[in-house]
Length: 117
Image (cartoon, rainbow, N blue to C red):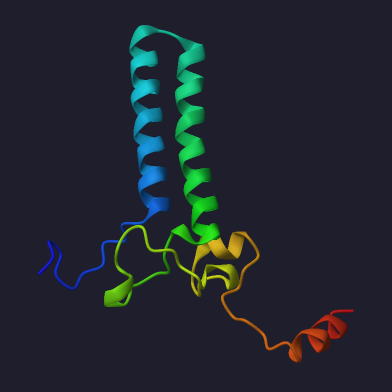
């Protein structure tokens, strides 16, 4: 039995990387603010922002996960999501990247392109 039983907490490479960068950037910005260093403050904020960008890019590369629990055999945090290329349904990050989460059949793709104009 795991620490979280059947609950999938979403531990992924994308999540851990984004969280680590956000924590490091926030710590740097906090120290810079207390020290009165504007340049280091902006640097810390940039590192914090890079955490969000890194997590998003890793999610799109398949190192994140779709919404909801994963199957038992795919819960390890270093398991790559092979379905990420087509996008996850109801995923804001995938929608921002232009991935809808619905894969059209190869025969339907040319018809969809022609109907757009």
